[in-house]
Length: 361
Ligand SMILES: [Fe+2]
Ligand SMILES: [Fe+2]
Image (cartoon, rainbow, N blue to C red; front, side, top):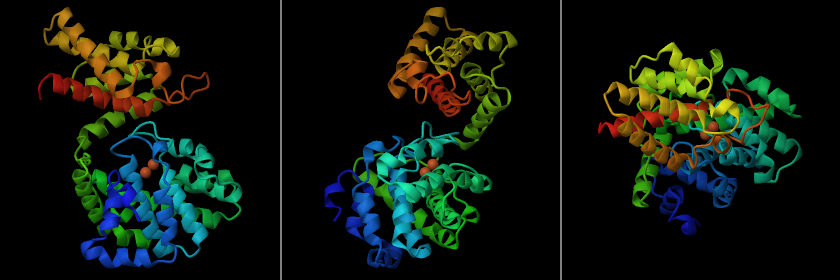
């Protein structure tokens, strides 16, 4: 059934082989389940072009979440209409992401795309949108988010939203951050060992297809948390912009003191006052590069060469150096000031890696 996809999709390869070791019984039950066709149909018709491009939240994550969601539905759902909705949510819950990190509102952005992607309307669309928006918010906010959509059947909506959260949560194995105590349904707790095994088999299948599997330690978690705290504080508490926040983040990870004058000056540069010119993340990173390499005794010409290399690497990774092109959805007067928090975090991590590579470490 999955032959056509086997060259590009690791999950198609695994399903076609149907060799699941100690989980064979579980997977056989899924294949014999009366609603299995809803999973295969959504999987075979998945609009892969619509998915977020990323090793962390891209098609690999979505494929695994769809399978985990189907297993959860087999264990937790009676009506096929509900399984079909969970499958749609699993497929497209992350299409609104703009960053792998600190992107708490990506669920809301994804929810706007669901009508077009699924062709749903009425109560079904309401349930999809509510569940998808809620998935990226804290559990404590779930009822408030769902109520905003006023679904006709709130308990049903909540149940399906929880299944999406659990299916999504089970794939946290990929970042080495799955705690069974955080699973909301007993079935999800039961599926934790399978999620581990699925991730292992999926990564092996990726290698077989010449794709690069995610390394669980792809970013030092301590650094990530340190940077996340700086961005959180910069954007949400101090209400600073991206150039200043990038300087603060890099100052922290490289243990480099920043003078108040430098931070004051940096406040003026971000996208030239949000006019859409050069991105503040790039500007903050370039200011740090000047400061850092200047302190290491590099000449002005040497620092300019590093700046050029950085600009080329940044443009290659994100496609531009301009705020108007990088900012999610372009620049608008009523944009929330925190819109670029996720990109800023990524920019700090990217610049840190650039400098470490430059240093040959
Ligand atoms: Fe998400
Ligand atoms: Fe996700």
